[in-house]
Length: 293
Image (cartoon, rainbow, N blue to C red; front, top):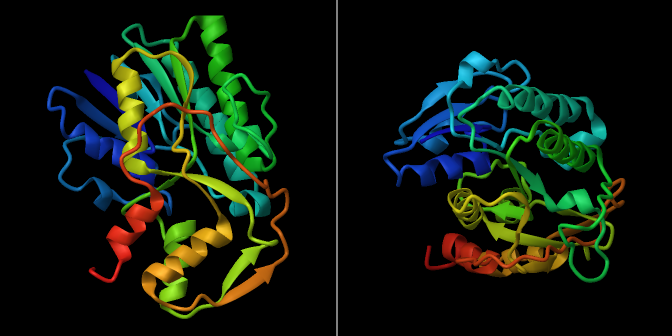
């Protein structure tokens, strides 16, 4: 089996590559252009071929005769999309379009797997998002991911491309880029740096351990799942609750600084999902940062 993993040096993509180490019969090919969020150290000890290319520049000859394309490649930092949305359109829309144009020319392809996000639904002020809910993105990031999902679905309908779209919540785990919520807050508390909290800090996010996410993605692939699937955790926290938890675990006072709310900031995300999880965010934080460590 040959699997193309785009964005395989990123946080979630690399976790997927590390998991594939357990399957020696799988040939892994990573496609990654090496952005600031990429790190080859994340896949140290893994057996793979690396194609250092932007997915917008990928050609059929690069990945022909593969069984699966699993697309983790994306610009994903919402604040960055607010200040400059163009890279998000380039990677998340143009890049996916190019991958699909290649995918429909690969006779051996069993599935095109698009890794998406709960943010495509926008605010979920009550209840949980269903896979049948309308998309209502609030940022250039989430709009570009919703657009990519629509491109995948249309390729399925027009060209009979077999596809799987997974929409998941906020991921946490080892080797996450320091600009992300968990590492930046933990480092700020350790260094006694004042933490800016958007609005009143009551925004609710659902969190999943990255290892649980990639395991479920692979299980869906092995079970020949098609269509749209949610990979959630039901582990939901207000932002300020999570910040306080990190302070408690570090046994340090949190220095708060309330800041104007982010433009287009969604109040709450919640996915309807049935997958199993092995670690909640509080368990992870206590294990990684608790006093015994």
